[in-house]
Image 1: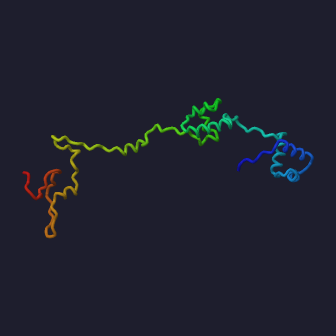
Image 2: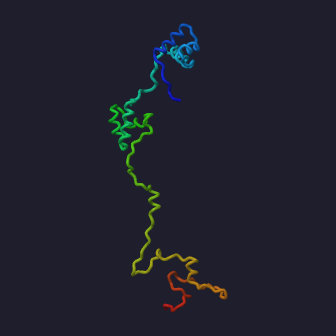
Image 3: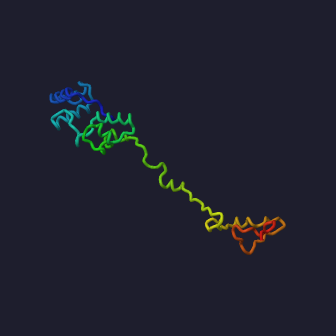
Length: 190
């Protein structure tokens, strides 16, 4: 819940004076048209500190004033690529650069800097790389890495298609890859 409007110093002094005269909380509330809890809080503060003024909060005072925060917000809205060093100069106070994002109002305000890294990260770059196939020279024989592996499908590609009245007979030895098929129909190259 947000903070409500504070009561004036004169009104607080009136509440304390009426309390000292012996008037109860509820009656003071009716006379001044205020909540009973507000009356009780002001009287408790007066009994504890003998004063009705607002005390400062605990801890160190703020380094950046409200005006400084507004100045920074205007600057970042106008120039999104502003650096922290430039914002530090705008504040004109002894402020470290690390203090700026710790301020409650500036936590979610970050200057939008250009990326200094590649769009694709290392694992993605590596997945986009493909090994280049080895291209053998025209004169020399094929090297081992360029020969296609011998699979059942490549072997069965050399065999004739059996008809429904014929039976498929497998040869005793497997032919070398790239060698002409012994079952080829046509003149052999021997």
